[in-house]
Image (cartoon, rainbow, N blue to C red; front, side, top):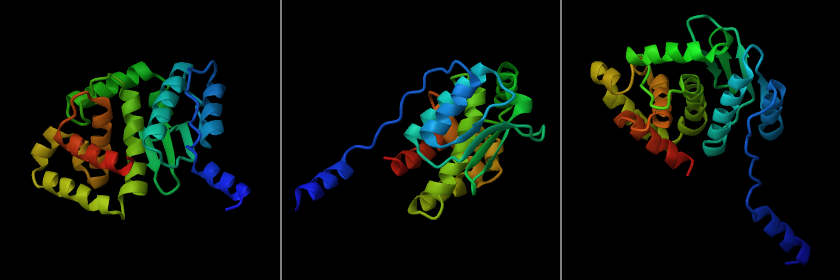
Length: 214
């Protein structure tokens, strides 16, 4: 092998460049630019505070670094008042509802109330706004990394077993998680990352996720 070819071969086998750590931005624009410049994500934080932009960027960077999937657009937009967020798995976009995310303290209280009622799984980190982002990210993981792979068969067994007893299912994950297999996956993923003692369904789903990204 020629020297130039050997050099190129070794170069291509070298470890991938790591992304820079996100340090709290001094402006909303800086937070938006960080995601655009380092991950190619078109970001719009219009309507939220700098604290909100920093918290969401921190959480999204954590997800991207540990469970990398394609995200094209991450934005704060006005959605129907009945929903915290919306994800388009085909176009890889996540939108958070500005009606809620403009006031993180109030949003956190709303989500905590949902959790007390069993609508969403309980968390232990008191980061309701980040939990919703993690939940939405979970939809893209399932679409891109689980569906149409051998891992889907593993997950379907979890879903089918849980769905046999909806009441027990709701008590061991969440009411919203019983809606369909997609919401079950995202609720379990969210619980696994935001509860220091995730329950059985969250543990089982997270085992699959860790296997996918190992």
